[in-house]
Amino acid sequence: MLWLLFLLVTASHAQLCQPGAENAFKVRLSIKAALGKKAYAWDINEEYLFRAMVAFSMRKIPKREATEIAHVLLCNVTQRVSFWFVVTDPSKNHTIPAAEVQSAIRMSRNRINNAFSLNDQTLEFLRIPSTLAPPVDESVPAWIIIFGVIFCIVIVAISLLVLSGIWQSRRKKTETSEVIDSEDKCEHMITMENGNPLDEKGGHVNDAFMSEDERLTPL
Image 1 (cartoon, rainbow, N blue to C red):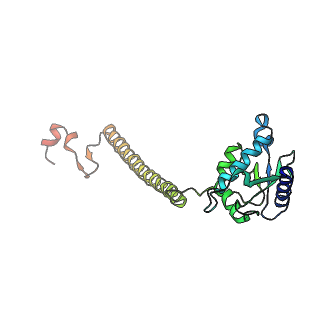
Image 2 (cartoon, rainbow, N blue to C red):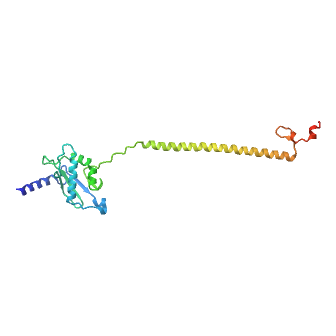
Image 3 (tube, rainbow, N blue to C red):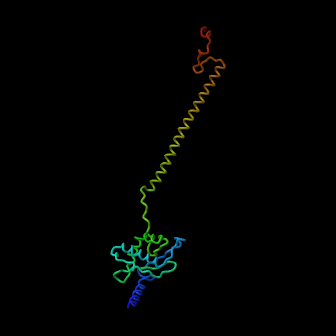
């Protein structure tokens, strides 16, 4: 009787878990590609861990807290590490709807990946989309940073232009003043050499160059 009961249970499980069955999911693992020399062999213990992780995920779903490892069935396991699995309802002899299983797996996807040292690309649930990482909450929008950088560049460029203009203006004034001073010195030296006592600027006789007799001698 026990042997007959075991055969009936096995046959029932075989009908529930098979490739393409209702509420069944295919899983594909790339252990060697992910871990290289540190790759581990997929055996009955790894299967047990997978079933435990799926049961753990299902217990997170409301009204599925009674899910046990025995309710997770694996079938069609291949050497290239791919298989199908279903989750059965503890109270009834049928599988839990795919939507509930999918929701549970997505909620615990990171925990499952970490248990096998894999990621969404090397541990694939073919009918369950990968869980996207939440977007990074940036405290400052990117466009403000770009605008600030451009604004600073413009301000620096304008400042350089203004300073360059002031420097060139001062340089021109300095050069002009030096030229005028040199011309005045040259004219003064020429006047002294020629003995011209005239005040070149006023057009009058410069008393500084007149002798004592010339000052006293009337015209």
